[in-house]
Image 1 (cartoon, rainbow, N blue to C red):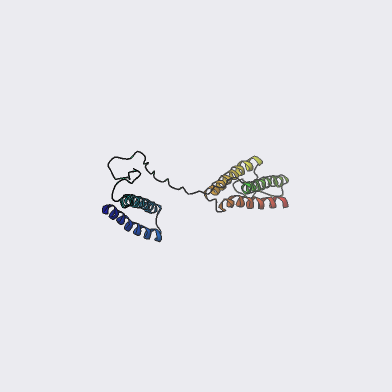
Image 2: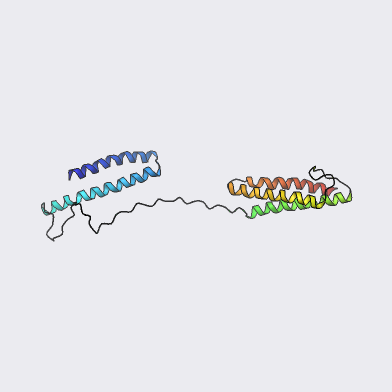
Length: 197
């Protein structure tokens, strides 16, 4: 009896030190260990108190007047005792990942695509009228419509893929808007220039 109580008293001292850790902030592993030690201590105290209260009520006998025997510690396991399964860890609820292609993304893509097409078409109209020349050195001085579309559509596709990657990688930031806005500004200037000549 005294060995059981001294064992539980030893665990109580361990609990005090773990509760101090818990108050100062601890990891989940330390908290689980503290909960496990608390459960073991409560079970040991319950087991130690059961035979003592039975003996005091029955005058030292292991059975009372109804013939019910109280549990004693033995080497053989009792069949009606089920083992306690370890607690499953609590998983944190993750935030849902926002959609990559949403209304804003489609708006910026459509704006960049529309300004790219209008820039190419107005530049071609101006070149055919002979009132302007192409300023972009990558096209040459008098580019064809196929050459302009062949250069601009892959650039539009690349900036769309880059925007999607940025939006998926950093959903909380608006970095994904930079490529379509830069493309729209560049082709917006070309559209305005082509429309005025």
